[in-house]
Structure formats: C-alpha cells, structure tokens
Length: 203
Image 1 (cartoon, rainbow, N blue to C red):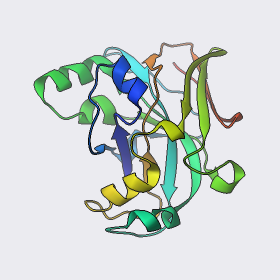
Image 2 (cartoon, one colour):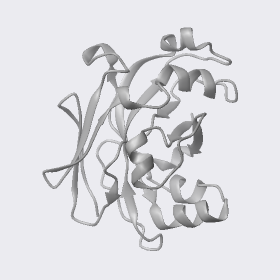
Image 3 (tube, rainbow, N blue to C red):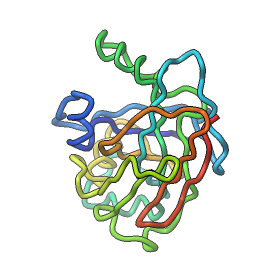
Image 4 (tube, helix red, strand yellow):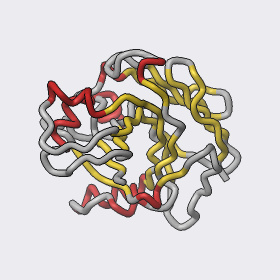
C-alpha cells in the first residue's frame, strides 16, 4: 500500500510557511513504515531537530484505478479518517532551500499517525468537513475541507495519472494553518466534525 500526501493545499498554511500557491498538486509519498496506528505514542527522534504536527483529512482508497476521470473519482473512496503528518521542519526548510526532496523530513518512521476509518456517510460530503487538533486541551489547528486548493476528487484524478491506486492506499489531503512543534508530554486529540478520532501522547 502507498501513503500519498499533498503539500501546499490550504492557502492559509502556505502563507504561514511562506510557501507557494501551486497551480497543480504538490505530491510526495511516505513508506508504509511511517504509519503509526491505534493511538500509539509518538516518540520524538532526538537527532532530527524540530518536529511539527500537521493535521489532515485522510481518504482510504477502496478500489483499483488508473487514469481516473474526476467525475468518477468519488467511486474510489467511501471511508475517511484523520492523520498527522509529522514533519522535521528544520530539515524540510534546508531541503526547500537546496531544491532537495522531502523524503527524509516527511517519511521517517512513525511520521504518519492515522486514526481508524469510518464511512463518509457518518459525517458529511468530503468537501464539507470540519476538523481540528487540540494539544493539552487547547485548539491549535482548525480546518475545513472546503478551503482546499485541490479537492479530493481532483487529487485522485491527478494522482492516478502517475500512480495506479490500489485498495488500501491512503491519501493525506493537506494541512490547514496552525502547525507547530510537539514535545514530550504533549497529548494530541484530533476531531472530525466534533467526533474524537485520535488521542495519543508524545514521548
């Protein structure tokens, strides 16, 4: 299975990191060893500098597809969850400055924490979802999927031109503004439409 991620997909987040406003999706991947499941704690790697949280809506692909037309993209997912794209921020900035890829700063072990997945019908349409992240009881990120530059169906159509999508592939759809560093002792709680989906600790 693949973990496919989208960068620079929320304008306010792009502004907070002085990032670009892309005219096509910015895509990168994480290996399956990046997955962190079942609310297990995240251990901060002590050799990678500042590690930031980035809360995202995650879609799980439910059928095989290649070259999917946007008008048919909604047939390729029925479940949704939340994920946190942990990012070694200083390493990423160095990579950006040097025109290097993001593999190490984004794809290290346990850098893709994910919730359980639930039927999308339990919530709302994919373009009308509210989500948020609390750290130690304080809201640090609030997002709305309607603010995405590239909607999920557009992303699936674009990505499937290059990658065959397979059952179980995960699509991290981008993070809103409010990213910041985690530290040992933090408790992260993530909500989708006010339903708690993630609750774990940083160590």
